[in-house]
Structure formats: structure tokens, C-alpha cells
Image (cartoon, rainbow, N blue to C red; front, side, top):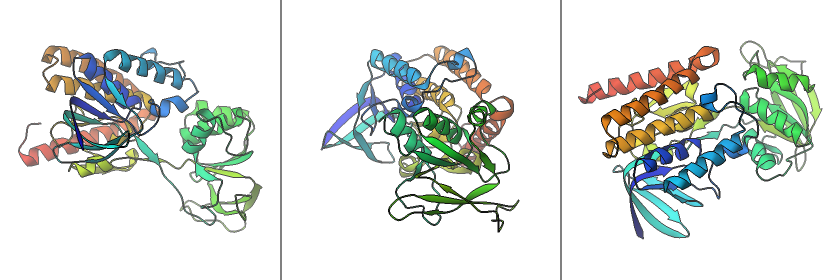
Length: 373
């Protein structure tokens, strides 16, 4: 077993991890980025649509372009990146168990930033294990990264931003989206994405869900049914569609396994996808020296993940003595201001409230333990 010692280890080379690595490395830290995929960038390289919002959040720029920009900055900063690398464990002292190029390593870092993102939720119903049933994110990977069309006739379950965006991208790739089904009484995603679906003529069935999927060796038909205000099926409202693919866009939950191993305290916030690690305003958890950033702290979107990564990277560099308090506070002030903008308005208020709840829980934990707030 080999040992690797660095100042900062970043687990995850997505939008949050790359941002954190850049900030720490550009401050002078020796940084190692670890990711299980064969290419860095995380979800950004699947996002062919343009971001929107403010210029500070790269409005009008496509996700994969933002990903390439982040990657270029990290490479220029001098951070080392290990791809095709599995991080299988983390001890309470934050030492990482790693498999890289077929060999076992122990990575010892003065500071660790976990930016592992989130994974797709799944639903179980009759026929849900047939080939042709997949997460919407998996379908997006197939079309935008691997250039493989998952099917010709697709039904999408879930009308959040993921369901809406992937539905439109499936049509761009040549598939027919025969219907979009949503159990809630209203579409859950942004109006700009929903408008594209409606203009394309895709029927949207709100207050409906999947009853069953039929097929011998693969998906052949899907039966949907209307649900009442208690989400119970309404008999006699069934409809059947001939499809070969069903995509599930039914939410995400943070990939927190490594953080549990390290002994962090958690809180349960449904708006963020479930159990999330407590962290302070610097993104540091209840385990000293362990920071978190991005969807692992609660599911939001790429712009917020990048800003949280920036904040974690600056905070880690400050804790290492590579930035003065004045330099660090100036940087963190700018980052927090941009985060506040992202979490303002009608769509961001729920996330803002959840994040404040998370910080309050962290303060209560610190008071209980007798630490500083």
C-alpha cells in the first residue's frame, strides 16, 4: 500500500470539486483531486443547454463550456487530478482509502473537501426492472456524452428541471417523447424549460403516475393513472402508451457515504434530498478539517455548487495559513453575495430557508459541544 500526502484532497471532480481545487491550489496549496470517472467535469459535460440568470453565473453559456473552463483553470493552477480512481473509505482523521491505477493508496491530507454530488432516486412498480427503464440522468449521459439514443419512443416521469431538460434533449437527439407524467398537480420545474416542452407538443399529464410497465424482454407499454389529492389511483382513468423507454426524473439524494464514515453530524432536510451533513458558514463539517460542497450538502444546481466549492476552497486555504484573514474574508464575502443572489426570488427561497436551517443546526451542535459559533 502506498501513501500520498497533500495539503488538500478533493473528492469529486464536478462543478463543486473543481471550483474548490482551483481556489485552494491558486492560493498555494498542494491539491489532489480524486474522481471515479474517466473524465472530470461531473454533470456539466452533460449539460448542453445554456445557463440563465446573471452574468456572474455565466448566463448564456452552455454547461459543457463552463465545465471545460473550470477544468482549464484547475490544470493551470497546478492541482493534480487522479481519474478512474475509487475512494472507498474515509477514517475519522480524514485519511482516505483509494484505489488508483490498480493499486491501493492511503491519501493523507491536512484538509479534505468532499464534493461527491448526488445520485438519482428510483421508483418501484410492476415492470420497473425491465430493460428500458432508467434514470433521466442516465439517459442524458447516453445521448450527450456517449452519443447513444436510449430509445425511440420515451415516456418521462417527473416534471422537475431534470425531467423537462432531458425530455427536450431527447427530442433534440431524435427520440419522440410521447408524454411527460407528473404526480403533483403542477409542473415542478422552471417555466422556461416547461415552455419548450409544451411548444414541442408533448402532452403533460399532471396528477398522474405510472401504474405498471408491460413487456416480455423489454419495455413495450406503460400504463398511467390519475391520482387524487392523496396521491391514490383513481379507477377508470388509466391510459396506455406504446413506448420502448421510460425515464425516471423523481429527485436526487446526496451521496454522503464517505461523510458518514468520518463521523460527521447530520440533519434531515427534505427540501435538500434527505440527510445532509451539518456545516458552518465556511463549509466545514463537525469533523475539523473536513469540508463539503455542492449537492452533497443538499441538492441545488450547478451554479450554487460552484460557489460552494469556491467557498470551501478559500476556507481550506485560509485554515492552512495560505491566505490572510483579510484576503480570505474579501473572497468569501464576494462568494456569499453571489450565493445569496442564487437563493433569492420565488424559486430560490425554499433552498435559502433550508440552508439557513442547516447552518442553525450547526450552531446548535457547536453550542451543545461547547465550541465556538
